[in-house]
Amino acid sequence: MPMSTTPNIAEMAALIADPSRSAMLLALLGGQTLLASELALQARITPQTASTHLAKLVEGRLLTVQSRGRHRYFRLSSAEVAHVLESLITIAPPVKVRSLRQSDQTKALHCARTCYDHIAGEVGVAVAETMVQRQWLVLGEKEFTVTAAGRVGLLPLGIDVAGLTLGRRALAKPCLDWSERRYHVAGVLGASLAELFFSRGWIVRLPATRAIRVTNLGTAGFAQYFDLPSEKLNRLPS
Amino acid sequence: MPMSTTPNIAEMAALIADPSRSAMLLALLGGQTLLASELALQARITPQTASTHLAKLVEGRLLTVQSRGRHRYFRLSSAEVAHVLESLITIAPPVKVRSLRQSDQTKALHCARTCYDHIAGEVGVAVAETMVQRQWLVLGEKEFTVTAAGRVGLLPLGIDVAGLTLGRRALAKPCLDWSERRYHVAGVLGASLAELFFSRGWIVRLPATRAIRVTNLGTAGFAQYFDLPSEKLNRLPS
DNA sequence: ATCATAGTTCGATGATAGCCGAATGATCGG
DNA sequence: CCGATCATTCGGCTATCATCGAACTATGAT
Image 1 (cartoon, rainbow over the protein chains, first blue to last red):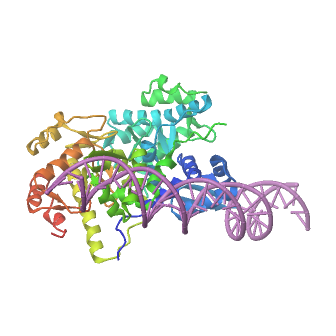
Image 2 (image 1 turned 60 degrees about the vertical axis):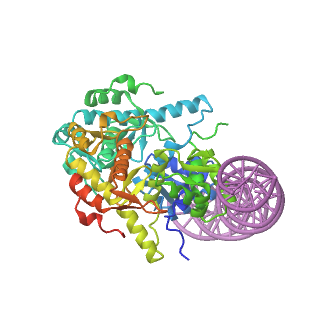
Image 3 (image 1 turned 180 degrees about the vertical axis):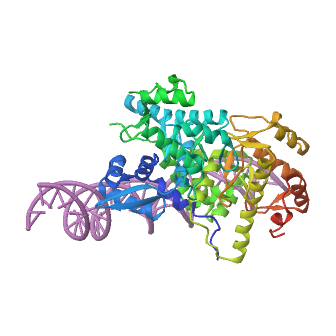
């Protein structure tokens, strides 16, 4: 007697369904690679339990490990995994604010945060929309198409589109934002934009979160290169 | 002591994580509204257990019920829920083929199927790509933008884009296809396209599946209006 | 060598939750 | 009113699994 033909969604969902595991996954949603101990801390569990959880997540191909010395670095195994998590956030009931500090954190998350390895939140969406408005990007089929104007416009920022190495990864994919409900730029271009912003010191990571803060340098930079009004960027705690 | 600031992804995932519940959800992914008894049959469980599961799914806002007489009709509560399920399929391990009949079924699913209320699979992707190639759609920021040419081109098909009622729902969103790994059209436009194809008799639902069959009428229609080669449509069991 | 740190494995415990049988409601047809 | 159908509720059984203490391995520092 044949089993049902349904794909084993349940298995993957079960991996996310545990509170400790989902906490670790969300901690990794920023695209960072974190240590087992850091993840244990994030999930508020002992290293032993974290170890078993991480083993399961790797076994289930949600995470990939990289052993270096006695350390083990974990990260999400693909952008698709990140996408699943983001879509789950979309349907999850809104976050209960328990404390002022927390409220600050969530506000920061909404404003600017890293989604896997690119920039999401208000800033990410605003940057993307500026690029579309300038006809640098056109929402093609499976991805953003970078126009000739886009290639030229990105050069002063130090991004050579033609030189971006594409693995099997798309150049510029649209990625739905759960806080803004609009798209921002993912893919290789999104990643190199994020890298650029970090290396120029426009944005910095807030400790132990996916949230990022826009620096004074960044306020000027985003205004100059992307026409972003400074009010949008200054709502964050310094 | 404040709990973690993470949204309760785990709760939603736990609802999907049970094999019986995920079977029911996948059965509803076609957009149909099904009876509790039908869902129990799909999940191969007794009506009693199905009832408790369905109660939880409604409680968790994944499903909505509509009582009519002694019957209770269930359906997915939103397109977002469908989106979560599809994205989970994307990362779930591939389906094991257990029998020939099953292989046929999966082939049909790959070729053409309904994803919530729009058309996915080869046909859905092909239609979307034709529209993009004709510049009817442009992959804008959060959604496909329908161009002037698109509005004109869709008129002969009986779709008045300006007249489409938008709730909070997007007009035309790109939706990643797990079988093709390319995008098809979701959103209000996607829904009305599907409705059109059904009402014109171009496609019909195969019983008890999300798979659809392209009729002879449809072969002609898709060729005439969307330049789809007939070979693409004829791979299905009649 | 010695100690500390990072991580895993094992075993016991405890709680959760899916499952079905049986009984109860509720609705429709005659 | 009565039997049939669709569905829910309850109770008890069982299995699964997250959790942590304790012991163990491996790497790095002194």
